[in-house]
Length: 315
Image 1 (tube, helix red, strand yellow):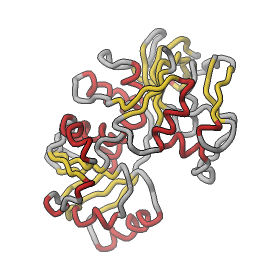
Image 2 (tube, one colour; image 1 turned 45 degrees about the vertical axis):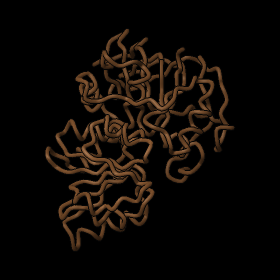
Image 3 (tube, one colour; image 1 turned 180 degrees about the vertical axis):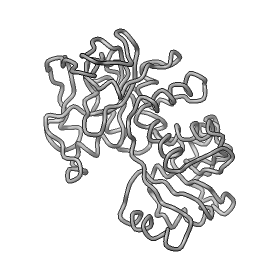
Image 4 (tube, one colour; image 1 turned 90 degrees about the vertical axis):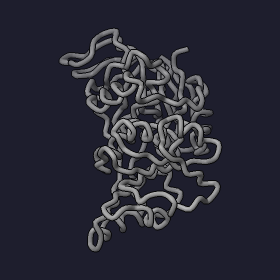
């Protein structure tokens, strides 16, 4: 089978197409013929060496965590999915390898695809969708009628977060650039802040939850807009934020928390249900064939993608 592999740490120039044996599923696993995958910031960060002291990579390494495709074989004691089913899911952070024609995955990280989604739409959903869901629901404890600010509302995680927050009954304000205002409104945002125009934050908030998917501004920039019992959730545990998370409880009811996607079938099924009901859609920024994975990663590194960057594995 064909797969894209990094030969060593570095940029997309380290990517090569390789021919490797098709893997076989073990107990509790499924063999999936991958139709589409997606790239996320974690992909280029891992393989560039940026995270080598936290999460070292063994080479050659096939990148990507997200996948959508068809079940072609089941290992012993595999339950919850059937041969021939169209499925989607996310490999756990200790593994990767979805940029390939076939892959094996534990059944616990797989769910049946919503019937109204294409493979490419479904492939964009797992990592970014579960990150958004777990940030809002688990870390932010978001409930109906609360006010939430989503920073980076047109990005991969952010565009899902807007829709999930609306599905949870929240009042949503999105932060994006001028060119993305209409998109964010179309996703259901009640209000949109254009960060390029330096709009006064005092006109908005206070917010029960601020979900920062970009982390381009210090916590001090958002802190005045956080409510008395508000929670600030970040995707990246930077040193300064870790300090705030430890010291805020000493004098305030506000909290700083961090989120990391934990793949599981239940959350995939929840997201799939929202998509099936028309409450959640994938905005696709661009689609790249498997052989041009390098271009997909380069697009991701710009930080300018609207929605998800998709890899079409099966043409």
